[in-house]
Amino acid sequence: MNCFKYGVFFCLFLPITTWAERANFSEFCSALDGQWQGSSAKLKQKPIQTHVNAVCSDDKRQLILTVNPSAKHPFSETWWFRVRGDSTFLIYFDGVDEDKEQEFSLYVNQGSYSLLGEGKLNRRPALIQLRFDAKEFGWLWLQNMQYLDDDSDRYLFYRGIEMIPVAN
Image (cartoon, rainbow, N blue to C red; front, side, top):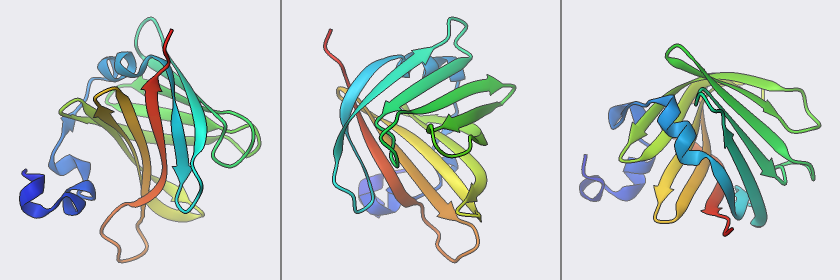
């Protein structure tokens, strides 16, 4: 698909399944492994400096991302991804609220990854998209959602996290 022909905005909000293939979790895990820094922000929020520590297990079947600070609290948040069969499972913990669990499908397109899952946000049914867009130096982690109980046909931005490698 040519994004310039249809407009960049249109391509950003197309379902990932129309332009991507299933991804190998071990490659995703290895690609994100490391220490990252950059700015992050939720919609209509001032950007803040953020650190992400990503640890890929030796067998490349688990990935733990620690984001500091959290989007809602002064604590860190932990994203624990693990693969089982064709699915990727997530447990999310932010130090305050109840843990959240979610099942995702993992896709790849030109080195960028996307996790798609159906769940609930604010007690409403929603599609949840976690995108890791490959950049020249690092990643842009976009957290998007689409409520299933309204007429919207596109994802809504929730938060973005810039991930630039920390210099050793």
